Amino acid sequence: MQKTPFKPGQTKQRIAGVEVKPLKPIVDERGFLMETLREDDDIFKGFGQAYVTAVNEGVVKAWHYHDDQIDNFICLVGHIKLVLYDCREDSPTYGMVNEFFIGERNPMLVQIPEKVLHGFKGISAPHSLILNLPNRPYNYDKPDEFRVDPHDNDVPYDWARKDG
Image (tube, rainbow, N blue to C red; front, top):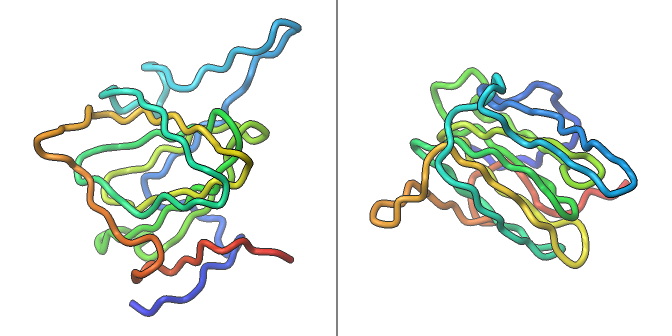
């Protein structure tokens, strides 16, 4: 596959299997409460574990996919650019890229299906905190994680900031 740059907004279609749940903070003078994922949500696919990861501003944490794990990403602090690439040759959206800007001012859960490459870039200082609620626990003896270099690859995406 030839690497051609993804243009933001070039497609409004979502990669097959990707789900988005807008999150709604309930705000009062004490602060806020925000539900993220419930077992009675249509998109709930099971619970394996919960973990938080941090990304510093300007840093790219990419690419990886799972054979048998669904990720549910939520940016709790700051903002990230979350990018998905459908590398599943049998998918109707094979080769498609989706870009999501998620965080404090755009709270949402993005559900990433198995075998979809994904990664994110921190776009707020000093860092962003991401909560992941995967449907399977991490297997230390046999990790279900396959990595691709963030910049030297065949993914048609450039992590550089797009001014204009």
